[in-house]
Image (cartoon, rainbow, N blue to C red; front, top):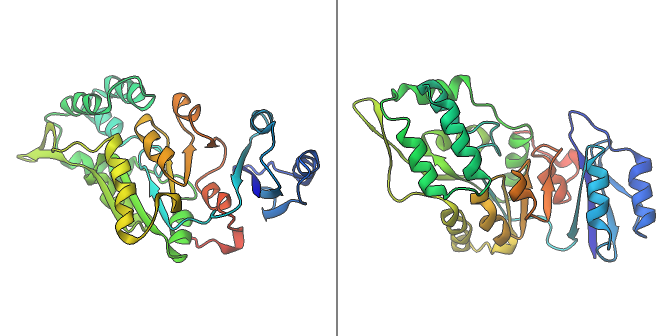
Amino acid sequence: MHVAVLLTDPARPVLDEPAAAALARRWGGAAPRWLCPGVAAEIALAAPPADGAAAREALAARGIDLAVLPAAGRRKRALLADMDSTMIEQECIDELADLAGVGARVAAITAAAMNGELDFEAALRARVALLAGLPETAIAEVLARRITLRPGGRALVATMAAAGARCVLVSGGFTAFTGPVAARLGFHEHRANRLLVAGGRLTGEVGAPVLGRAAKVEALEALGGSGIAPAEVLAVGDGANDLDMLARAGMGVALHAKPAVAARCDIRIDHGDLTALLYLQGYAREEFRDG
């Protein structure tokens, strides 16, 4: 058995009964079960539809995301989440670079690295080098004035945690940011790189070892120590350094991802917010914890 999940941005709910019912008839599925009126519905199917990819593209033009998933094992025992442009709406290093007066140079490197055009570690070191001399106080300034949480993040973490899931924030960014963000969102733990500081200023170096693409897979596998298998993990990210983690997890979700990343992922959320990850697991809106 499989399930087709239809969802959209809760801020602009455009999913209607005729659209969901028409898809159910077309695929010989059960009547739609509404997880949230106007926002999310699911359709039980006997097998994956042959034209699923075409249907996804057609619905995307209307602002609707579609994912077809196995019905068994949808609710996951762990959440493994990227931070920059996933749990928050910014890239922290780009915000620091803007304060340092090198914003355009760093943003260009960030974009290329996240789309898989540059080696992650080399790109990270090159960007951090451009921050040398920036006052350490810039970190607190960015956190206070520039970082915003992606909508739905609090509900995602709170709901999964209340159901007993382990929630881990894992980032190729920096602990100076993952610590506060993890605390705000309710994650159980966080992993990231260390920005080195001397005399109250950034040195332009990253502490060894650099946590990148492989480290995210290692974080997933470390959950095995808690008895959580990869198949029981929901992973979410947007950049090229997330791809191995997304492929290894039982449910890997590309959220508002870079084009090269979205093209390689079966589950893509291009319109919904982070609550989409709850709907994918079969949670109804009334089951959400709002953090």
